[in-house]
Image (tube, rainbow, N blue to C red):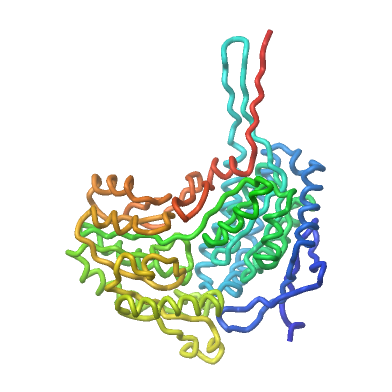
Length: 489
């Protein structure tokens, strides 16, 4: 059976390669529950091969020795090639991850290309700093590449979040070892071919597939020649990476968990707020760190919002990820589906299930009977300290809680170990300003959700991360500052 599966190898020193141990694992199509690919399973030996290739390429200077402007021409070419292969990449992403093809094609892959196009322009225009200390002295602050950068990326937005890190790391002259999430290695595998077609020198970009603890991921964080780790994923994994990296003093950037508050006041435009709340909760099957996964509604409009919300959620079309009309696909894995189902049982005990929360693969036809499909769910009657409101579920679930006034809304929003993002809906400008400064989150959206400008900082507070990426923040993370001072005689 495995002979019919797509073969996904590592990419090291410019070529696809098997694991040194020849170990493999199966990648599962979430919509069918059947394997679709056989993936090389990396370990410390494969990581060492990749890091050695990356270090050799960095020291050779074919990439790090280019000017920023020259490197940015490669970035633009990579962005163009992503667009040329947009459909192929979108199908691969939906097959591997289970998300609707409309989201892959119009969201993930388009944004992946945009990441390269943006940094190809932004990095080229990013100037060094110069300071005059009088007529006889001058100080220049330049930024130099770090060397070998380790990137560990998640399964929910595989290529999108990989390119978010790869583009600025390359722009600043680094070489890369990428460890994609083991559940979704397909688009990274295809992307490697794009880097080769764009002309990147061998060793500049490398991929090692595999698992995390006691496997490829851990080996990458421990390797002494890796200068930095940029990680997106679970908070518990981020803590483990921080401990593992401490002996080698790596530079770290973490975008971790989220439990975003979505706050609707009674003066909000409900015709915009309600459909956006649905999109914020259920896009990508709720598997987004920025999801509006806690909905707080002012009491005056609570009943109206809940009624309209439930009606809208019931109309969401769950089905074949490759069907352009599908609005919600399959969860990424059986393990994750079981986790979300366990939280749904907790939600039933702690509150009231208003709709959804049932596995529905068998209802979609024989092809999908073993798929990881779940109807979107809405809950009410939950207390602010309930597990359902406090813990990151990362699935198509939405608890709705009523609040009386601003102070209660702020208290509810901040009653969370996470602080990645929040949305506030109101027509009162003063209120919006007050809340946006008092809610503890790295990103606040006013009368919208997921509005992004790639120049702005992306990251969270509390248990949602360390550091920021985006625009100059990414360029600074993937480089080292150096001051050169001149004395004129």
